[in-house]
Length: 272
Ligand SMILES: O=C(O)CNC(=O)[C@H](CS)NC(=O)CCC(=O)C(=O)O
Image (cartoon, rainbow, N blue to C red; front, top):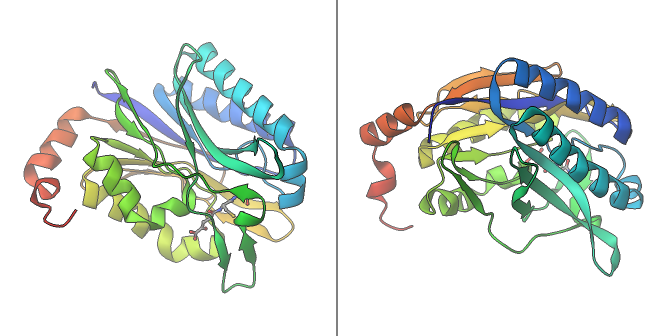
């Protein structure tokens, strides 16, 4: 692993696929111009709209999102995470997997994860989320992509952040960098987002890269924003605030090694 810059992108995606990809491309270019070699796009980067509409367009979204990620990675010679887009489930027109895809600079898929924990929650602000009505839960633990240059990268998506056992699995498998792309609700995000990201970084002594959705997407759907990069000590290295943009920071193997020496908690585990 070497030292390099990583970027967590922050978008306001809408129900307009083409416009979302244009927005994503602009932000990828911005990150590349600032020197980023690892770039994460948030959950729902290609489409954020009504559940039924997402399902109806799932095939198109899946094809275009995947092609987009591969084209961008190749064109800019960077590794890109698409933090979550619907991929239709075979023989089931009513469900899609919420899929995160990591693509390397040659445009090749190197890691794929289907979201396991679905957001079926009545948020106290009056909004009701039933992700399971259109999403099929993945049934496999997330993979780790091991790159000589970028380190060992573990995938996850959004609501997963509330389930520490998933990240413990990743850190025990050697993860050094945890991707947590999200579309966190404005209501839960204001109290939980930062604390959860710092907790996952501190307890696993890993970098956390958390791309985010922000602002008003459609109707009453608002996201919290604050795409964030956290270092293995829990220090917030970059925070994109509330407008679309990027959070960019250095990922350093020297810092990682230093923190793991200063705080060897991963080695002191008793129960798991
Ligand atoms: O709605 C879609 O189109 C796609 N899915 C999402 O945006 C997902 C599921 S609804 N959002 C979350 O997991 C938010 C979690 C969250 O906000 C929390 O844990 O507090």
